[in-house]
Image (tube, rainbow, N blue to C red; front, side, top):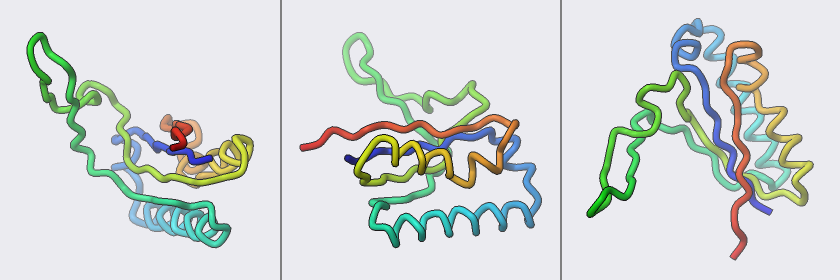
Length: 118
C-alpha cells in the first residue's frame, strides 16, 4: 500500500539552523531516501516551495487564497511517497525520518496518509 508522508515544520526553527546543521540534516535525509530507494519502497520524494494556495468553494464559484498556512507557524516543507507491505512498516519509516529526530522538542512533524488504491 502507498502512503503519502507530509513533512511539516516551524519556519522559524528551520531558518535558524546553522549552515553546518542544515548540511548535516540534508545529508541525513539524502541517506534516508537512498535507503528507501535501495529497498524499493520509495516512490517519490520532493521538497515543496512554501507558497501554498488553497482553493475552496465560495458561494458561487471556487475561490483561491494564499493558502491554509498564512497564520500558522508550521508549513508543509516536503513530501514523499512510499509503497510498503504494511502500515507498521510505514509507521517505522515515518518514525525514522531524520527531520523528525532533528527537530526533537521544537515542533514539526510528519503526517502519514494512506493513498487510495485503484
